Image 1 (cartoon, rainbow, N blue to C red):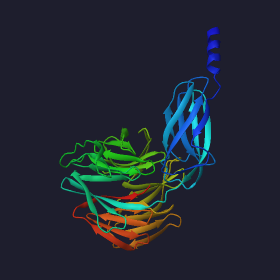
Image 2: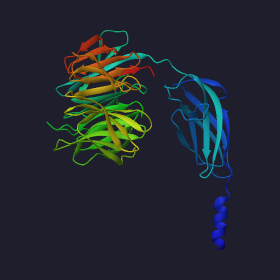
Image 3: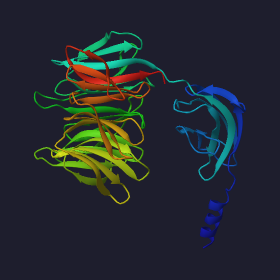
Image 4: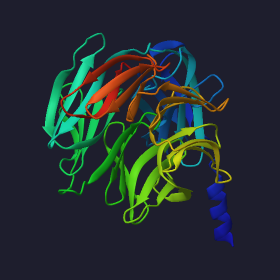
Amino acid sequence: MVVLSLSSCNDDEDENPPRVTIESPFENQTFLSIDTIDASAIITDNEQITSVELEILDLEFNQVALRRSYPASGSTFNFGQRFPIDAPQLETGDYYLAFRANDGRNVGSAFVKIRINAVPRELEGVLVLTSQSNQSYIYYREEGENEFELEHNFFSDAVGGGLNYRQNIFASVGGQAGDADFFETEEFSIVNSLPGFGNTGLPFYLSMTFDDQLEQFILTQRDGRIRVLDKSAFVLLGFDGLANHFPLQVFGNEDGYFLSEKEIDGPLYSFTFYSFQGLLLDNYLVTGAVRGVFDRNLNEKFVWVDDPEGLELRLLNVSTEFLSLPYERPGARLADVIRTGNNTFIISTSDGLLRYNYSNGGTVILNSSAPEGDLYFDDLNQLVYLVSGQDARIYAINGQQVAEFSFPREIIYVGFDYNR
């Protein structure tokens, strides 16, 4: 009894949080949203300091950028780190840089107000990946120029690509031949490479995407494996999809990963939801491949389905797990979909290029002669790129075709290289 009582007292005796004295940055110091801050502080504690966190908050103390944690030790710790703001989406304004020190039981905080100026977003160029006969080619056209220049060619029958313009990394995956290659976009040297094990008629990698919201590269494999890499192309995790299914496409979300999956030896499709740790959370019944998933609000998702009987817009309530059907177009197939506004979508269908507005339920045929294909959206210039085979057509938001380009090989991917 005495030992237990003494132990309890010892457990409760440390109620003093670490004390944080910020040395830099100084109050109201100005930075760009892509700058790196030299952050330093003197931290003292009556016990051992275990870690220090830095994060940027708005003036109402809401987190607005990625939090970073650093190891620490000792009862007096001279903290110093180069902290990348890395938040080009921030608007110009005043923010707090928060320092939080942890001793394993208590957290001590200090704040300094800083000024962050947004970098005006500009389109620097357009990147195009093409492929033919186990050889792939990367082209680039600078903004204001008319012609694409060949930047790099490599062995691969590329089936997908993804561009992280903020870290200047481009990724490509091969199907029957070729690896998952991650290039830096200055000299196109390899940053990382994951081997592919495809054979004739049996592609290994099925898809590749870079999710701008999560800042992750996500690729799928024929064996049902999904791989996730961070924005710098370092492996984060891998997890398995449904048994005896192909993971066709992954849609990142602030809550986890939505997948479109199909039976290997059957006609059935599944729309599945996995946690960020790769745990299966839900499996929703759909009757075709899912082409797009978009947030409507905290609880609802827009889910676009290529049903063989006609394209569908499903509204998923993640709380009730109910999939309602607010819109369908009987007889039309859905090739791809992009979001151009909160409730507005442009869809590539067998009926042409359409615009659908969820707010009023209206559908407008933008261009009935547009072929089915993959859609890419330059949201800065409000231009829609529609890729079909070797050809790319560029449409204004009203459906008027404004330009086009072609390559002698199939176009696999189009990426927009913004300055931030």
